[in-house]
Length: 282
Ligand code: SF4
Image (cartoon, rainbow, N blue to C red; front, side, top):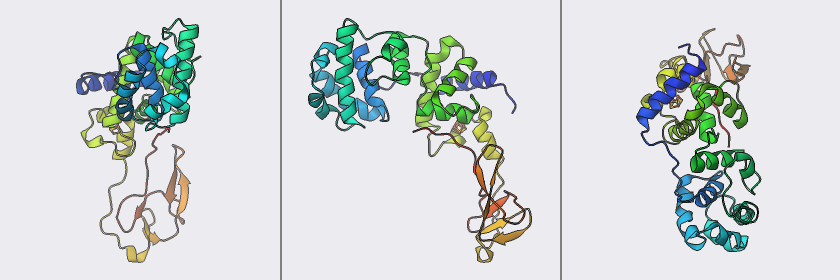
């Protein structure tokens, strides 16, 4: 289906709104200070794990002033089960003391000010500004990056910054915060990195990735692996040593060494060897 990216974004958000009635962060927090702590801890870690450690951490350091007086070594035992606990302990203590010293104990509201805090990059700043202060922002994490690329809301966007800029052009500003949560939750529970549940996905009718999956050739059930590991349907022959061919999406595909066709099948399973371009950031 040929849709403009703006139209595709409208259709995507419409169905996701129906599927996800409460699009909000799954991090548990009560104050902007607690939110920034949770978001710093969630970098390259799951919200679930972060939610396990924050209750005890917030009991010990209930305010930003308490955390500002902490030594990173004291914070470490509370966060040792999240990723990068050494660095994150230092970020938490450093961020709190900067908030107290330079921002009068208030977590700053602008993304520029937030980014001056230790451990706070563009994505963290955008999340805090958007969630705590309802500043219009569209933070791009690994889920938003993958989902936006798969669906085709962005094109040739190989960095989070490019994804952010392109999404901002196709989604109205007052929907950025909501869109961010919808895309994250869709990526976390349906359009997962390894096993996207395309068969049960409400976005499938407008999804470019799904459309490409549908164009893959059907399996060939009657192949005989005794004749060779692969079968080329274009020149109707088996072979063992495949060539490679780069497709129009820049993806290296298995190809027939004689005719260069990519219409190649695994002789054992009968499945096509063709892959569909996918998108990940760590
Ligand atoms: S159809 Fe598949 S790839 Fe597309 S959004 Fe849904 S789960 Fe993701």
